[in-house]
Length: 403
Ligand SMILES: Cc1cc2nc3c(=O)[nH]c(=O)nc-3n(C[C@H](O)[C@H](O)[C@H](O)COP(=O)(O)OP(=O)(O)OC[C@H]3O[C@@H](n4cnc5c(N)ncnc54)[C@H](O)[C@@H]3O)c2cc1C
Image 1: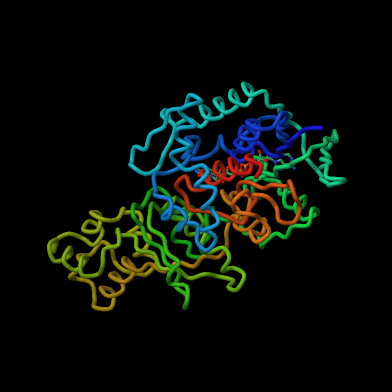
Image 2 (image 1 turned 90 degrees about the vertical axis):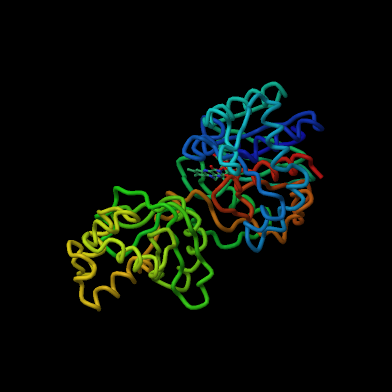
């Protein structure tokens, strides 16, 4: 019999185990994969953007309507607490852009090695290749059944993550276990992944990264759903940092719409007047050459060919209708989102354990005493930029305090 069993060895589960060990004698950490923290390893493209420098209230705002739920967890374990914790276990961090915090050396493995070292130093028992398949509570004791073994504990912390990137351990059993213990799960959506578009001209533009592109949903009542950042075209859609946050906002819209029209500004949010002035300055150059200052030639060509505008003419030689069309497609390029990659490539899951059933000041279930949740399994998700890992560490910490 253990004092505490923690299920899942992501940021949340590891942090919960380390914290629980401060007050409890025996802590068992169960992980279904052969190695710990596989998703943490993949974060930030292997560089691990573990948190950011944003002040607490602004940080919470970024999580949307459920943001206030983070308050107690962030009070218990803030971004600067995380940085100090990392330093104490031997990982120096920095924020080169003044915002996103990474380990110096930009290698997520340094964090994982330091966390494992800490788990071992604290004598926390770790069992890998132990997939939990069911949990029941009998006479105040949790009976935790894996595919191989049955364990017992007085308290249980479930930190099994979301459903995105199955190969990194996101198999979704945690939700079933929670349901069987009496919890409800809000609707789950894949979030932060590439999107498919209908327009096939994008296939000609896969070589460039478009800086500071802006994307906005072109549907009544949803114009507030927008994002700005680096955009990359794929052979059948769009990806890149701006798409990740945008996808997080729009996947729930597919409940009501089969396609989502959007408007993209590919020229760093410049407007038609800017373009008119540019063409006035460069009267002897072709449209293609003038636009090279703000847009790659492959994109200008693909767009012009799709809209039947002669890119190898000077702007002044275009007829009036083509001039208007050109200005419009450059500042307001229409695209139609036709679908997404689903959970396979979703960096985040939107939805999860219903927050109404969880005490935000402890992460304890209101349904089952001594049962706690932490991390992405809860109905909390933030944008790109270290928000989600900070949430995993903070909620992991708070749950590990065990009230
Ligand atoms: C490619 C990628 C890049 C990302 N980059 C960033 C980034 O730079 N910054 C950021 O803030 N966020 C990033 N995220 C999001 C972030 O990784 C997650 O929000 C965070 O890791 C969630 O932590 P967690 O501990 O809740 O869950 P996870 O890290 O998913 O850990 C859950 C663990 O539970 C285990 N498990 C699941 N079910 C069972 C079971 N039944 N029995 C036993 N074990 C089980 C899993 O194998 C897994 O190891 C990224 C995500 C991805 C996929």
